[in-house]
Length: 261
Image 1 (cartoon, one colour):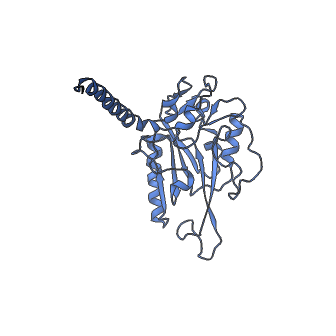
Image 2 (cartoon, rainbow, N blue to C red; image 1 turned 90 degrees about the horizontal axis):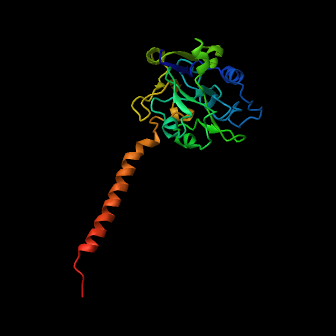
Image 3 (cartoon, helix red, strand yellow; image 1 turned 180 degrees about the horizontal axis):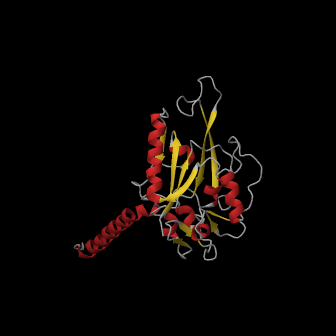
């Protein structure tokens, strides 16, 4: 089976939310309602137990170059459709005590709700805050990478529904190459603030959701150096062992030291 990935290009996103709707319809997820969050036209706020695709509306001042505008133009938006990153080293998978989270043959991280016991270890172990418990039944949920569709030879619902091909889907290495080429072309056209987010050098060792973005990636909840919590286990155990060693040495010295009369 091919190892697959998303390539989400913010420079092509028009904020139509077709990806959100297609995801909810295919996976039969609850609606988010129509109350605006206060951040432009964002009514979903963030990824969660019933929101597996979320379109960021990031307001910015007009920028010159490809996709830019005149200096006196009103503020505009950078738009980007966010999703679970399906990390190569996944904090949620490492923390799960029941085996509810598994790695599929396509490279994604799949959460089996019928095995989940609601402990929420995966929730606190995700570097991106993607996993969330459903308050009604206590179980955790997140994007399934449309595992059922991939098994049937189809692309994920969000990529299928995107009208501008802002969300593309394919084999991982091909997606990475396509993303690098797209960034090169955009920079040649004058879009100097464009970059690719693909944290292969971080502790997550790369993801199966790669993003082309403008400006600081943190404004789209894409940390430049995401960290898996288990990275801190080695120094933590080392410090604990050192402390235990000092305590043992103190006890031994107390017994061996000459007693005053």
